[in-house]
Image (cartoon, rainbow, N blue to C red; front, side):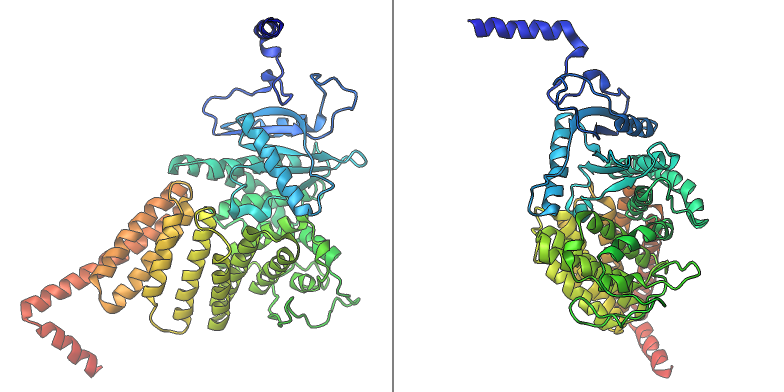
Length: 542
């Protein structure tokens, strides 16, 4: 009976105190920023641990959290909540990668209890005031971004305007990832592009945001990466340029290859003993002095224990941007650099981390780099090597559990087969590639990943169009027209206007070829096949 009256007393107390009640995570209810039509709800955790003798329910000031809140509060269609809890990776964990992954997923679980899908958390170094900030969200927990999960954004001067811009880029990028529907997604893409545009001019002028810290450049790179996944790759080159000094510093600290005073090193060999392409043009922006190519520094890494989770995440982001720049044919960096990055990451994961998803993702990107480089150099053997890596990656993951990643790898494999046939000037083996494309479409939902789905459908339509026109096959051309139409709709849903225009052009070509074949068939039916004999006679005469 005493327990019953005790419970009644607690209920009455909660009704009387109202908004002053502290929830189970230590966050006050009045910290919630009420905003109508909220697309993204984010949480801001503590960046400094509370005092050991502080009262459990007491509110303790956190200046860093206040700075983060002030910076991102101006982002439209977002609302924040303070999480009065301090998070940090387990220092006693045997594997630092696993410790960081568990910390990120643990923070996300706490966020879900707050009805939040994105969280900013980290730690401020009390000795120098630097801030190591992490961001986790439902979108970043996908297997597509698993290597970037330990990403650390280091800031030097918290009150610097560049730091505020970087934080706004991170949250706006999350809005792009979370948005659905063509209009909503196009609006968020335009907002992110506007923020990046303001900083791009400074990057072209040589600014690397050194006062704000390396985190500003990484945040800019992440924003450019998100836009690249929507078809806009116009910021890849500037992102690679601003990230390069910090990436070079990380790699130089881990590389053991001696460098002479003239900047020349011994001839590089691959991590598995093979020689690398000497085409390293564009690997670095030389500023009047001879610099060692970044691919050479990557090849000089032998002790993979020096590659910590922070370096892996930064290299994964940098390597992904290099791959997107190769896809867009920007000539911003060489294919040899991309191959060196992903080969090193695949080797690092194989030796230490051991996660099948991480290995599959790194092998997939390595295969993509090889295929893109082989297409540029018209090297069919290199393209075939990339296809072999895609096949390796497919065998490492479950299509049901990791559908988007599986679809991306299957798409890359089919594209590699098509590219190899094109370079060799032989007919595209549609009986091989069409089932692969169709399998990729089945495991990747158009609603959740419209751009990936659209790319696969566009590639399938191109195979139908090429072989249908070659063999004068009306059925294949009809499939091409329908596939281009579906790709157009998917690209519109993803906010990829350029890709949608390309799909529209493919649809028009399909219509034209069908019209020509229809007209040819009508002439042949009317002349009793004379038109066909005339065509053959003209061909023999030529």
